[in-house]
Amino acid sequence: MEKTWATSGRASGRASGRDAVRASGRASGRGGTVSGADLHLDLSGPGGVRAALVRALRDAVRSGRLAPGTRLPSSRSLAGDLGMARNTVADAYGLLVAEGWLTARQGSGTRVAQAAAARSAATARAGTPGGPVRPTARPLHDLRTGTADVSSFPRTAWAAAARRAITAAPNEAFGYDDGRGRVELRTALADYLARARGVRADPERIVVCSGFMQGLALLGGVLRRHGTRATAVETYGFWMHHDAFTRAGLRQVPLPVDGRGADVAALDRHRVGAVLLTPAHQFPTGVPLHADRRTAVVDWAGRTGGLVVEDDYDGEFRYDGRQVGALQGLAPDRVVYCGTASKSLAPALRLSWMVLPEHLAAEVARAKGTGEWSTGSLEQLTLAEFITSGAYDRHVRSMRLRYRRRRDRLVAALAEHAPHIRVTGIAAGLHVVLELPPGTEQSTLQAAHWQGLALEGLSRYRHPAAPPLPPGGPDGVIVAYGTPADHAFPGVLEALLRALPPAD
Image 1 (cartoon, rainbow, N blue to C red):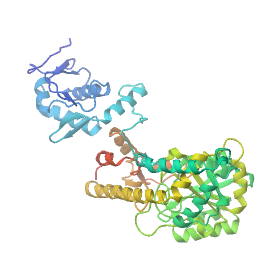
Image 2: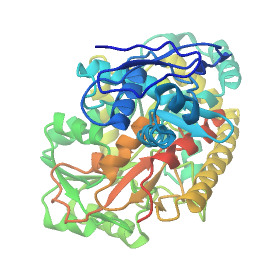
Image 3: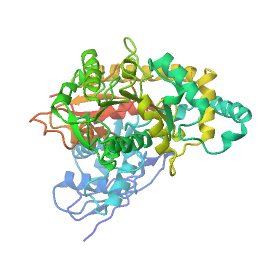
Image 4: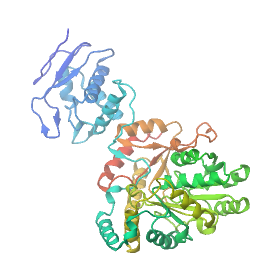
């Protein structure tokens, strides 16, 4: 028999295993306390009283009956309403806080966590109430790599540059280009890259692309036509870049990565025609390629006729020590320099560039000029104006300072609240790696999901052809601190700290 109490006062008697209980009117939403509101909890099912209460509260949140932000009765009030011991309610609340369903703060009471809505939606999509939680499409905070703080895009300065560029553009700029890209942008890039990154560039050797992936696809096709069948890549790297080479028919050989960057000495043990590297800031571990290895890979390319593909994805953002110049400056005839506006400005621009050796520039441009490979001329003209006017330098300097402050806040928070977690890759870029105790990577990602964070593990970026890790191999998560907006960053830090494993 089901018993239901509408309890504006106290419930008499103790809840039994088949009871559905309506508890006191102290639950409140964001608008404040709702006097006399009922909290219906189904305490049926197996297990003891505490297990029934945990299950009932979890189901109420999962189903959406308790919305994010809803304040729950105090443990004393709910215990009285349900006829339970206060410690039983307090233990149930504590377990649900640990699981991420509830939050508890001094002076604010116990509330339904904001992340609970995303978690509930994921469970609903899984089709199994109470089953495994799948990642949500729209987390509360996105700490995945691949983008910068798009809320900081310089809209006013960009719009002004667009007006100036379009007004001054020749009529032929509104037609088709020749595959290389607009000469205005290639000239501006040649000057900027020589000054800021040490690249030895000529406008005729630059090809502008619609994103880095397009550039890799074009280059992979050209390499294949030149007889290359295999390329070397870093053991840890971005899998979409590997896929671009795979689609071009190129097999990949993973190079070990350590504290000095990629172990390029391994190139001599393999028959490869090219190597893809992130020498200024290895992705995702964050270490720069050691000077000895920079020299060694250039020597390898010269001896074998091989090609080095340099991905300088976030070279403008270095915070500690001297700038690490582009590898291309050491051997412009053996290195393809690849850059992009996705980190410095925004991915939506779909603008990247390759500075190519002279013997490849014309062929890559011809390949791009066939089919639907063209890149929007108006965006190119605007970026050219943005660079030549000095607005690009001002924006990069401003964002470098902003990102450095975020990095410092993150490192300080970890040092204070999670000193057992080692942080690496902090000298540059828009992300860091948090080294975790062995075996805790997946549980940390799950805990982050419960906190409303989209986070990625280090293992996600390990090449599938790399040798298996030894027992106790590196576990870690990648925190892209450059992605959230400034106003959201304090909340992101709090959620991240709650998701990290405790000290032993």
